[in-house]
Length: 142
Image (cartoon, rainbow, N blue to C red; front, side, top):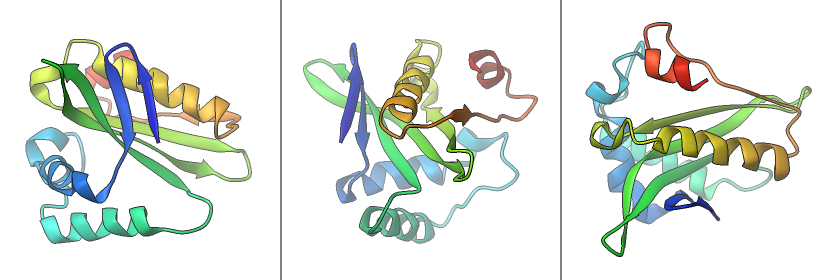
């Protein structure tokens, strides 16, 4: 599954993305607003492999955020949406963009694509996002 707009692409994660995902998820510098970060690559890898192999109705969707650069696809982050409240048909979104690609509108574009996916494909009634009060960039985006 792919969702795109302009030169931004959200691709549903696959087994081929594990090295990139583990690099991002285990990098404490990217998650400085979080209370804890899983730094064990094997734990992260197993978590995402379980998600990929999950059967039944998905409760979450994980995407690699990529841009087209020099006629190739360059991964620059992760975007995620997960069920927040089944009863209310509410979903929560989250994303991270590598530091060297921040400030170029990629987070905003990824959030817009997640919102469109939520309302059009998941038939969400509500979508929420949360951030640490010190994460000024995420707060401004919300």
